[in-house]
Each structure stands twice: as C-alpha cells, then as structure tokens.
Length: 65
Image 1: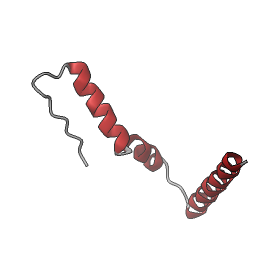
Image 2: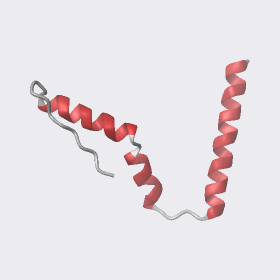
Image 3: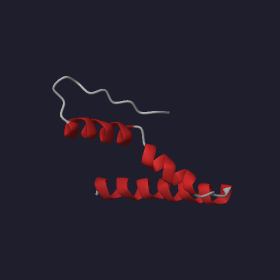
Image 4: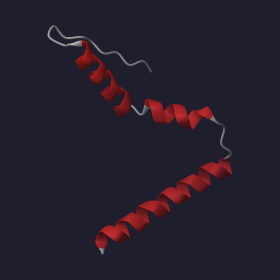
C-alpha cells in the first residue's frame, strides 16, 4: 500500500505535495493508522458501530424535519 505521485513537466513542488495529500485522503491512510494505533476489543468495535448507526439515524431524522 504505497502512494506514488508522479511529477508532471509543469508541476511545481506545491502541486505535487497537494496531489500527494489528496491521494492520502482518498485512500484513508491517516484514518487507518489511527484505527490501528491502539488495540480495540470486539465489544468496543461493536459499540462504535452501534454509535455510528445511531448517529446516522439521528442525522437523517434532523434532515427530514
């Protein structure tokens, strides 16, 4: 899982850095690193999934009203 950014003939350093940051964001590299940083038990994972579902339900209700 490596991210490769190729520099075009007219790309500046800033443009290449921006391309790299965009690819990192699209591939969720930072989020995956944060998720793997600490061990989570199965019950913690279930609880997080449940909280996420509830958040989505509440958001949908607010948008509907």
